[in-house]
Image (cartoon, rainbow, N blue to C red; front, side, top):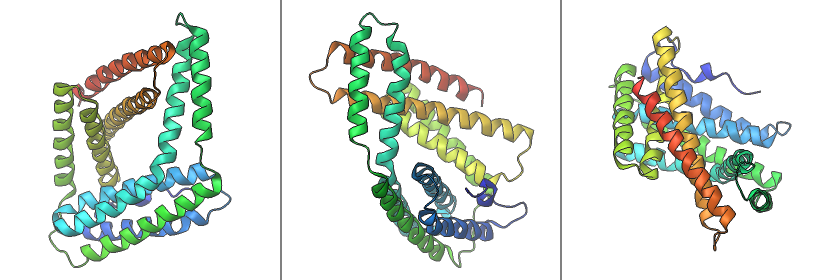
Amino acid sequence: MPVSPLTYVFRPDEKARAGFARILGEISARARDLPRLSLEPVDELIHEGRLLIKRARALLWFARPVLGPAAYTRGRERLRKAAELLAAHRDLAVTQATLERLAGKASKTPNQAAMTQLFQSLAGDLAAGETPEAARRKTLEQAMDILHRAAAGIKRSAAGRIAWPSASGRVAEAFRAARQAGKKARRTGKDADFHAWRKKAKRLLYQLELTQAEPGRRMARIMKRIGKLQETLGTHQDGVMAAEHLGRMLPLSSSARCVLGLLEKRKSRLRRRAWKIARQQ
């Protein structure tokens, strides 16, 4: 059974230093126990494992002002390594899901038969690349071991540090970074900048979730909007990944070009939606 998200939140009136150590300890313990849950579906365990890594990253970024460059960089690289181990399965799943959603639009295209054949072919290719469950469990075990050791190292680096940042100050910094990333993405229109915006929006959301144990009505609305923004930008990135997968199929068939066209239109709609959400903040 997943741990309550409230476990990973600073408690009201809890000092940042104490809350940091407590939450990091909870993440470390859960990372140690997660691979042992053999009766749970491996996909759910991998999903929870990825969330644990994200929460650890949020904690690490929160403590960056007191950790120093070397300790911060070391912790970030370890957490990145753990995340990369679990990324391949996730990337495969979202590509398949994105293409399946687009399959519904294939019925509205002139070359419906060719589109249907293309989706069937892609589904077969993706299924052939599926990693066996035993291998996925092994990968989860490796990732959680890295997370467990990374958490211990970060905790040691933070021990004895006194000048901890305020929650409001770190949230304000995360807001500024997300706003600047959004302005840059809109100015350049580059997929990479939209991806960077997504990462900044996600970091902001995790900082809010970390520091807002009892959000008021206004803050709850803000958190909901930030969640909607990063979800929209995440869907945008999923489409970019699917297009990249299609782009590797050379030579491109007419049906593949049609799918790329659908992905491009979908990307434009998602960008407009993201800008609309961002203006509401």
